[in-house]
Length: 124
Ligand SMILES: Cc1ncc(COP(=O)(O)O)c(C=O)c1O
Image 1 (cartoon, rainbow, N blue to C red):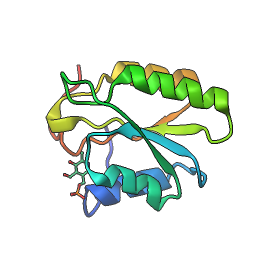
Image 2 (cartoon, rainbow, N blue to C red):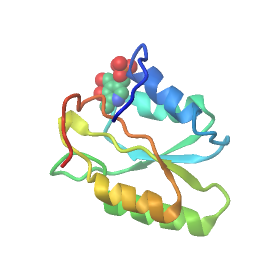
Image 3 (cartoon, rainbow, N blue to C red):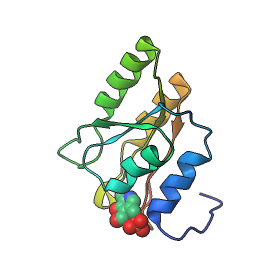
């Protein structure tokens, strides 16, 4: 990223990032089932609902196929749509960000990327 904002800790950063997006109460944020509680709290503190997807056993990060299925299902459903996707780079292993970005672009969803475990990492 070219720019950054200093925060007191990672939990506050996620909370603030979600707050800046103008999400509505009841909006859903997709996130991995295997991560720190801070991710779910960022959703809950903003009145949103965490929607958990399983992780891919190889990189231990969110399974992008499951994210796709959930976004499509919730979009069809309509009443409480998925507004955001929160990829988390577990233990420095990168999420397949190309696929996540494509999905977010296609369905006009926002990404809250949690890189708390990936300082200094590069995604090429
Ligand atoms: C993936 C992830 N997100 C968020 C956090 C929260 O960071 P903090 O403990 O600084 O609030 C952590 C902390 O370990 C983390 O591993």
